[in-house]
Image (cartoon, rainbow, N blue to C red; front, side, top):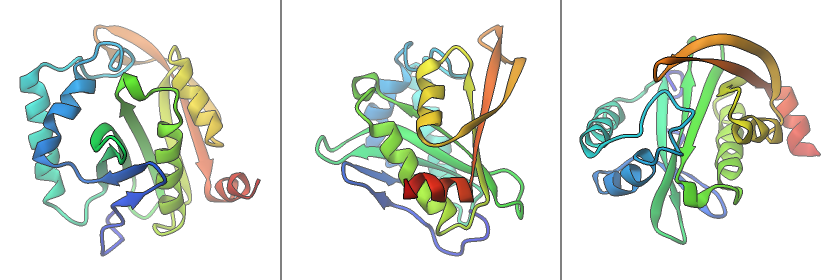
Length: 190
């Protein structure tokens, strides 16, 4: 993030390593990025091999810059030794201490707590080391698993936007979720 002089990653959890992407991750990224079910509610995908390569090149270019306001990290499954998804934290208004986050995971790793584990680690760094005041996220209103995860993380629904995003030729509704630093502390204490 722009106000932090040193990178705040990699982040290690019990089962995961959140780190910058490597060229060798392309096959793993393509495995989830090309899955129509993974990208069903996303504004991207499913990706063909050329698109995955372009995405990887764009990430490599952004990773060469520090500090940066938008940090996209690979989520590596330590036991499997492979990338199972990505997680992003982006400062939206420098000085506001507010950031948004997003994530995407290989379908074989859904419903096993990996998304929550990675997000909790990201929130701990965001509210701790980075001194953020607020982290927010949006979810397609039809993506029940996504917004239930946000609620599990202690985020609260702040808005329901009607037909706010044009995705793959159709308008979608979005839910906006957020959590403040003090709410995060209460969630961690309980």
